[in-house]
Length: 226
Image (spheres, rainbow, N blue to C red):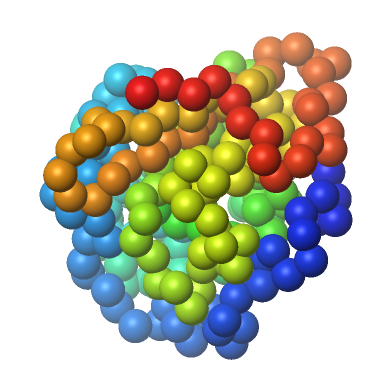
């Protein structure tokens, strides 16, 4: 795994550095992107056949899955929102910025998802490494995002670029994490009216000797598709 020094100084800082537990203590039973983008997340999960044992990180009251998987673990900051997630089998309140570890056994998940929240991670390389540890070989980590966010809680590197730059940032996280194959970057439904939707995902390597592409710069990208 590359070091945070791979990214410019201040990249992971935020305008509001107060305890995230305070910010997320407010229940927000709302959608953070429009209905078309929400349907797009579910459609992508359907295309990728997100099923089996799934971990949804930075989760809330909805996980956007088109169907109930065998087991869904939701990890998020607000207990009331997690309690209202109808598909969840296990609910865990955890602050991944304060402690970037997942309470999951090694090679215990088929999929890990992160919907419209990767921009809030202040220690993304540590979290991505934990996801790689948690995934079974051949499993997928799927990140989706738009151009909407809580700007005081998003990292400065995210706010300082455009949408294609943000796709490159997430791809760089994968490139910098040992154990992932080359990431796929997609602009979903380009040109559609409403909130844009972007997706970046990668497969947990099936090669136990694969160390990953350590030290990739923030501008690195994977396979870009329409």
